[in-house]
Image (tube, rainbow over all chains, first blue to last red; front, side, top):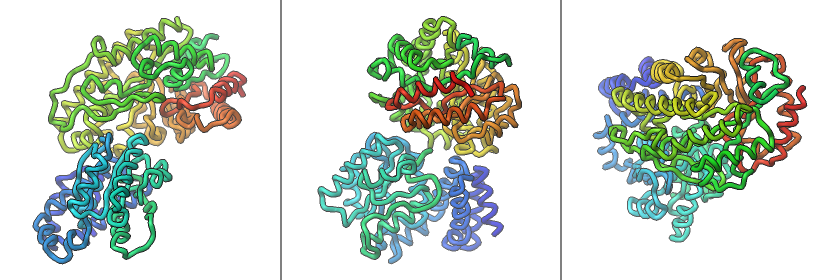
Length: 242
Length: 336
């Protein structure tokens, strides 16, 4: 509990290096998996609760993403051994392609999402900013992704997501690859998700792994339905920037 | 009273003939005058013709220079997108990696966009000939790097790269000082600066006090005239105490979600407060709803000597019904 409090405070104060030191200590003492489950995940849960109540700043959310990224880096050996085991992301099908849509350069939310997805064991192929619809779909097919995450901040760029929808539909990939959308504009205009052909969104970067998991289960047939809708919770979406 | 005298009365603690009001109708002037926005946001004469149309329609007591902050960034290499019915906005920041510090240094005298911004204010001041105050809108020095580096890079630099933060802050300070000085030389009565990075939505107060406020204090202390601290799209009242004593700040423009009473308790009775009808929501307003909302706000602030009714947030949208603006004017003129 003390470690969680200290890690939480490091994130609140933007003390990334101190957070890293704490995580190294936790990993040394209890092992990577236990540190993840017993320290980092509960800490991020606390962050998520504050996020939901609008009680943390964008900067603190950003630091949380960086701390998650550092944890993934610290566990490089863990992740590589995991990926070669039966529980690895490739075997589980937790593979995603993510990027900012054509003409969109607001990378902050996307990079936070990448960190949180990787922490949950997803193999994430981050295509960066200004990604064409064809590139999204080609890459998803090439790596065997079950979810494309398309991020856009503004209404004008969000409309470019329809090209990804068309690309998926024209290649009859509706059942194989799900389209998650996100960004500030979707928090303000939830109806836009369906309008651009999205199959779900999340109002917080921390909630994106839950959304992707639901979409993955749709692909594998473990849950029915066509659209996942919006995962309830905090205010920072996939690629969102207030 | 002329509009300028009316505003002057409020600023000096006198009694105006009625409550002054101001609307962010920078964009709307293009619609009223039938201007192409490409021309409107590049030719001072076209901009001024639009503002004349604004005066003809609703006669606000304060006029604003172009509200197009992204124009300040293009000279550094940022890419903008132009729209037929809204101001230019940032498409792509100039710099991919914050370590790429070799960027152009546009100056108000030579950069086409900065010259347009300053000359529009100059032309508007000449056109009004003292009848109305003209305010110039300027990007806050702590926010300019968002337009040059992108938000992610700027946060990364601010939080984890102190040496680069000093570099980009100094660049933003130079820019702010030069443009502010040019605006005042052009006759601007005051500046309005929307400030985002001080908001707890972006930066928690402990970090803002350490990293942002000293930078703004330095920039504002170099101003040759007054500035209005604008809420920047976020609530201001909850943290107004943190920015209350910044130098040369003549007033605060509040967000539509802010409480005047809460802000007034913190800033005291002598500080100007402006607000807080949400500008971007005007396109959804009816004559009846704006009349009611304006009356309610005027009534709430009727004993507040240092209050100017104003729209908050960004520009009033292109598709706003002109009758709504006429109704606003009429309600203010009728008083409560």
